[in-house]
Length: 182
Ligand code: SF4
Image (cartoon, rainbow, N blue to C red; front, side):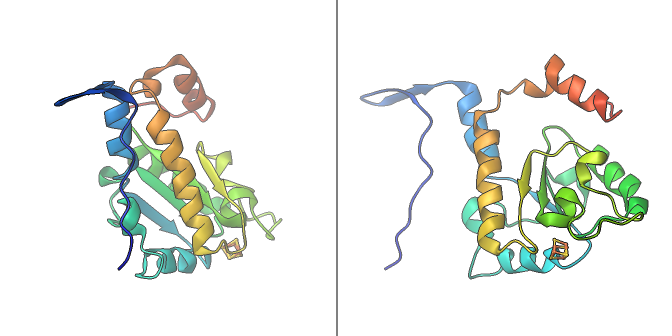
C-alpha cells in the first residue's frame, strides 16, 4: 500500500479541542499547496515540464496540477525554454497580467541565463525583463529538478508575509524592472 503523507500544520498553540496559530501561516500553507502554474514553454524544457505533469512524477501531489493558460488565473509563472529578445516584451506582458501574489521560476539553463545560446538574438536570462524567485539548473532539468524548484518556491511562499508584496523592498524591486504593481 502506498504511503500517504500530509503537509505539516503550521507552528501554533494546541490544547484539548483547539489549535491557535497565526493567520499569515495558514494563508502561506494554503497558497504554497495550491499554486496554479502558467507554463510559458518555448522549447525543449517544456517537454521536461510535460513529464513532470505526467502520472509518474505527478505534480498534483503538490497541489499544482491545474495549469492555467490565462495569466489572470495563475500565480506561478514557469518559464521554460530559450527566450528570444523579441519574446521578452511578450513574457513581460504575461507577467504583468498576473495578479498578486505571483511568483516566477526560471526552468533550465536557457530561461536562467540564455544557456548555450550566447547570441545577439537570445535573452541572457529572463531576469533581464522580470524578477525571478527560483532558478532551476539543467539542460534540460530532469523532472526531479523541476519538482525541487517548485518545493523551493513553496518554502518561499509559506514563509512570506501576507503583505510582503506591499513592502517598500518589493515595490523597489518592481520599480527596478519598471513594473507598476496593479
Ligand atoms: S536549457 Fe537546454 S533543454 Fe532547456 S530549452 Fe535550453 S537548450 Fe533546450
